[in-house]
Length: 214
Image (cartoon, rainbow, N blue to C red; front, side, top):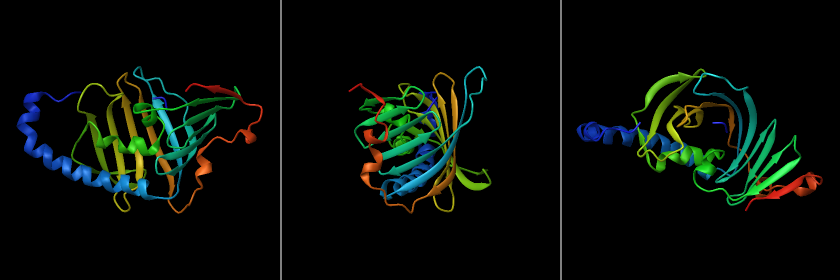
């Protein structure tokens, strides 16, 4: 995915109110995260658009995601990505090359829907949810900011469907000013995926060059 600190005095003065706001926002995010975590198979159609700090827009990308807990497979025009919970395979179509790695932390959050959604659990301050309409859907919109300056994103905004607590949109603002908007155009949690779906099958790409980065 291409992708401010609170002043101590302000934080201290608003602490009682901030605690109440956090509780409400966290309760909403907990419901959304639980839906991802417990499902045996979620299929998403998504669309991403990115704009850099200078206002330059990148081409819109569309794709499909298959998710089961912390496992996922992403299918995009230029590449496919598999992650089985430990190992990641990135197949770049033009180069006919597969890079194998074992991502950790923010590296996983850059591509994993579950890790991205779960970022609120670790080191982010959640603002009060705001009722809005996004893509013609009533949502709770929750803005998250890092509690410290050591995060890749300076702001994450999640829009959660009020009816079923599914994710409608996520907007990521990176520390370099790059903003990426991810729209979920279809969400279906009625699948039961075999774990093999989330591992690269070399027999399907016998001529691909393998680059092991582990």
